[in-house]
Length: 292
Image 1 (cartoon, helix red, strand yellow):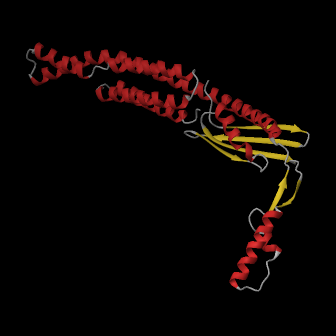
Image 2: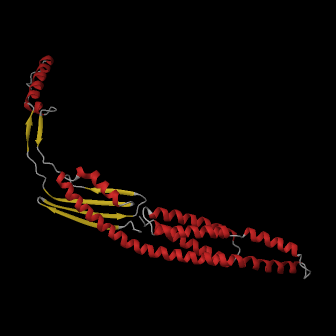
Image 3: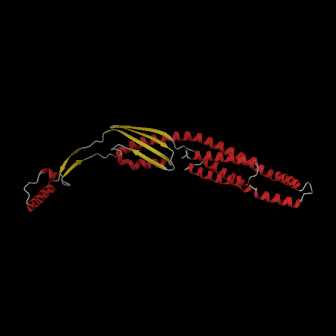
C-alpha cells in the first residue's frame, strides 16, 4: 500500500505520577531521519524510541517531541568520603610544608577534590516510564500512519491515471509505427516521380529505401520493454516496502525507452505521443518523492 511521507500524529499515556504526550510530524526525505526532542527524564530511552520508529516508518524526516508532565521520585542525600578527604588533607599539608607556605589547608579545597563529595541518589528505577512512553509513541505513530495512508490513496489514484494514459499512448504509437512505414513508401515514391519527371520508378531502389527506413524506425523492442515496465510499475504500486524509490527507478527506465522511441520517430503523431508520455513520466517521478 502506498503511503505518503507527510503527516502528523499525537499520542498520550496517563499514569499515577503524571502524563506523557507525544507529537510526531513528518515531511519528505530520501531516507529516514529522526530528530527527537526529549525531556531529561525520557532521554535514557532515546535509542529505544528510534528503534520503535524504524520498525514502522521507512522514509521521511521525522520530528518527534515528548512532553513528560510528572516527577521521577528520588531519595537524595550527600555522601562524604572521609578516608579519602583525610588522605588529601595529609598530602596537601606535606606539600604546604615542603613549599614553605603559611596558609593552612581549608575545607573548601578538600571538598572540591575528586571523589570527596558525592550526591547520593537512590533514584528509583525509571524503566516503568518506558512502557507508558512506548504506549504514547505507538499511538502517535499509528495516527501518523493513518494520515500517510489516507494521502497515499490519493497519490495512488493519480499514479494509476497516469499509467493508464501512458498505456493508451504506447498502444497508439504501436499502431502508428506500422502505418508509418506505408506512408513513407508513398511519400518516397512520389518524391522519386518528381525527381525523374514521371518516369518509371525503380522498384528495387524504392523497396531498399523503405526497408532501411523500416529498420531504423522499428520500435517494437522499445514498445515491448515499455509495456513490461508499466506492468512492473502497476505491481509496485500495490506492493510493500520502499515503494517511492522503486517507482522512481521504473520511471527512469520508462524515460530511457521513450527517449529511444522519440529518436527513431519521424511521424508527427508519434512524436506528439512521445512528448506527452515524457510529461506523464516526469509527474510520476515527482509523485515518487512523496511516497514512503
